[in-house]
Each structure stands twice: as C-alpha cells, then as structure tokens.
Length: 60
Image (tube, rainbow, N blue to C red; front, side, top):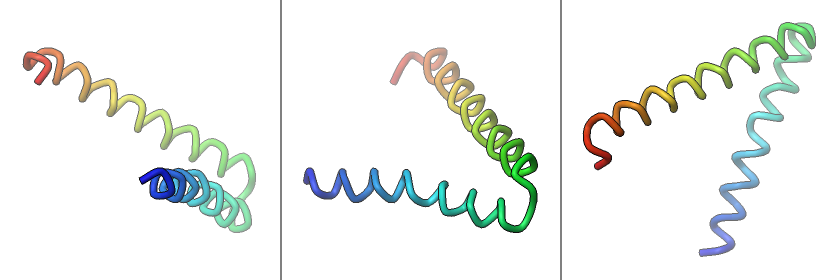
C-alpha cells in the first residue's frame, strides 16, 4: 500500500513537469507560466466551489 502511494505521488509530480517542459519548448516561458497559473487557479476555484456546495448540502 505504501509503495502504491509513492508511485502515484511520483506520477502526480512528474506529469505536470513534463507537460510544462513540452509546452515551454513549443511556446515561450511566459506563456507557459501564465497558462500553468491559470489552470491551477481554475482548479483551486473549482475545489472551493465544490467544498462550498458540499458544506451547504449538509457535509455528507
């Protein structure tokens, strides 16, 4: 079970880095950075909305 956690964690860290490297080689670093920030901000906003909806629904 512990090894599965570490494999998933390694993949979760590696895939975005590889994707950013590929994107940076096709575009500029500034475009890559702005895109990454926008995606991360969108995911954070989505998580906030889902948490608020769950809280209002009774915390189930």
